[in-house]
Image (cartoon, rainbow, N blue to C red; front, side):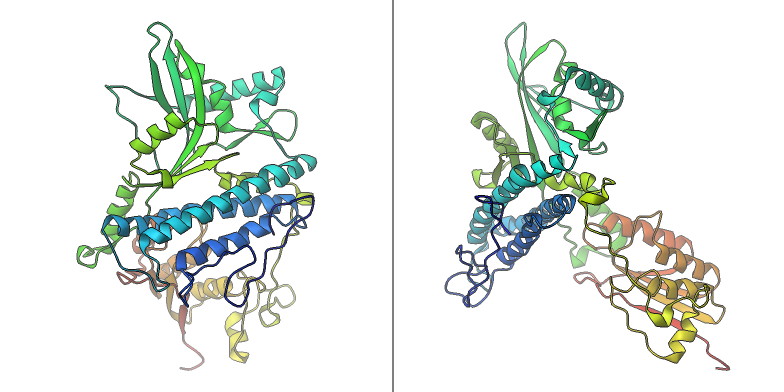
Length: 475
């Protein structure tokens, strides 16, 4: 569904037989039988945006889908757009299966993303944000706060925000600072009160702090960047604050492991992850609509970007941070939580856990997640196998895990190894976004005595497989 227009919600058009919707969008070129992979992915993300625009959904669910749309788009630029840019720089002249060259794909992506982001902004500012307010969750601007509320937030700023801020000015002695990937920043123009000299400075908004600060005495929230902007005089004493505007940078985050460089895949990936922390290649610049043209030019020049890499947002930047609001304890504003069921074959007997191996001797058990509970089926199988004295070996592939403090399946593997069972884990180190977590778990498993092997360079092991070798009866 599109944002509301004229008081009515518009349904997402259905595709015609040629793959084009009524608004003229298509994922393929006019003379090709194939859909373009990148444009098709944007069509998928449009469906996420449609969920955010669906006014039949609870408002915090809609905020969550706006956040998912933003996070998806971030990864799209980090991986797919960065790959196309590399092809353009390398002078690749060929075309993809749909007949589009890398340059043509980038141009089409820009047009499509500008349209989708405009719709996202309109959905949030014109529909979701007012409905959040009506539901008692109000995102307000600093200028709308009362004096007492500002004073309370000023104390919060001094205690928790100010100590972690690091303003960086640009002058002949201080080059343009490195802007980290996906960071939200303030572009600040200051003027020396004595000399009258104007300077550009950058203030990074701390990522470890909540993006929306709660206003004392209610359910009102202020964007963190506005709180920082209201106290810039504390960061630039003796200077006059001329202007300040938020901006955000996206960088290339693809990890490219060359076969001939990967003698030790673990060490190679660790080195690449360390280098990614200061990736030199920016791929997107998002700015507030208020940012004047001269500052846009400065940022584009210093980041080595072109006008086509600039996206102007007429609203809040980085709506991915709406996740924090979606986690508020407001059941009336959320969809009813889904709780999976335990298959009858695995259900407890008179309050006692079912012996899963006994259940499997009676016949195969098919589980369908998330409708069937993972914890009482797969997770319970591995948990019981780790403690069962008749289990001789436990072998598992691992693609993604939960946080290091949890990961019950990994904990079961560690317990199995401690019990003397032959325990093997194939860990896919290049699971996008989870590389560091998987490296940490791989080292933890190795220390616990688990035999750890890694995926094949150039391929990804997505399969989720576990093999339990168990002695049955007199065998």
